[in-house]
Image (cartoon, rainbow, N blue to C red; front, side, top):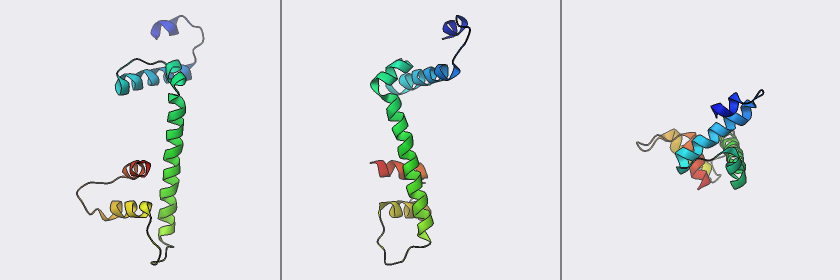
Length: 108
């Protein structure tokens, strides 16, 4: 990478950082060296983008439930998100549940 930078008059830092990130993710997660093009070819970039969208969707869903919680009537049935929020808030066990845990459980 350094040799590549030294040979160029103009460097696209976004591309270099993306390449470094792709390489690190590939080595850590998959045990192989991947460059940006390999990840793009395999659709990994699109997958990461979708994961970010899904995370935002779940956060909005949680926020919506937290806002509506005050307005809810007692007769309404609880859904999965309500139950998970209740587990987080009431801490019935020794496991500390975070918002990321809730998002992961919603994904499964």
